Image 1: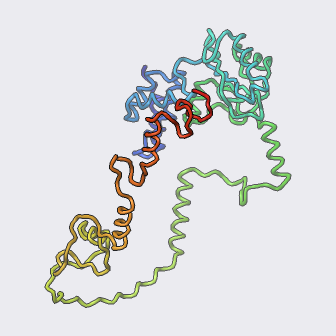
Image 2: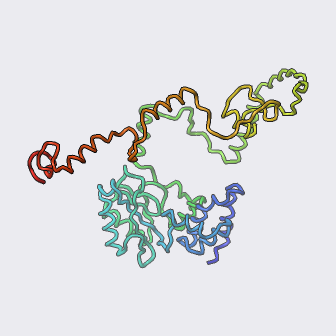
Image 3: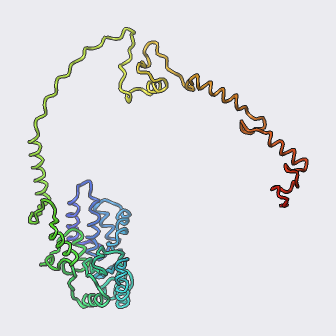
Length: 370
């Protein structure tokens, strides 16, 4: 499919919102944009996003299949979502969904024959205090009952646009996708419709009653554009830099006189910090640490060679004493085991008598043959 020039202009506008080296961050709104033209994210839409962002189709497809808001097959003008998760289910959400499914003759993610309604059950619509809830193109209908839900879908099929409980007036899924892509709702007075829900107002009333507010917040503060905010931040930074006191000049450092070459005639450089030492020097100081360990080529230096570390004399004596007290057994048993008891048991077994003089088959010595 060839996308319209309007879509291509909007795509360029979306990409321009992000830094040049972060253009792939525009993928999410771009997927909503292609969905606004086709009603779903088609293979052509995936290819379009990959083309304008310089990605491959697999990268775009991985994102498009991850989020449920991107539809992968044609969807109706109105996406009716019924919450069937725990809270709404307890309050009757599943009954609302079942009633709509039977009335419309469709199941989950299926569309009516007239192309008007696509039904889906949602795991959660994040409005537990209004449950059971249903959304139409993501606008809320709160505290719905089966008959209320039927009235809404029948009005939609008749060409009407019922007013949601909260939010602006309804629009089609394609029109909603334009807004999700980051563009304003251009319908006259659309954003002025609707109203807040009672639980939300209850929270505001409680905050007002108990004097709870954000410190220093003025609700009449105008919302600045990004350019204005950046300019104000730059001005504040410049003021802060100008208010900083000038740094005091650093005292002059005393220059040490150059040391004469050592009388030993060594040409080795001065020893640097441990991290800058050669591996050989670090190894030598680890084996035999000494604050005065000289550099490798200093006269009289003896570099240790690889081998076992010298053991203290007391450790050697303890090792010798332990070896003398635990001679190795000749039969291969671990040192220290006494073989006398085992030899006695073997002799008694060969003679046919147990240790108690009873039947050798009576291993327990109780007279009960096992």
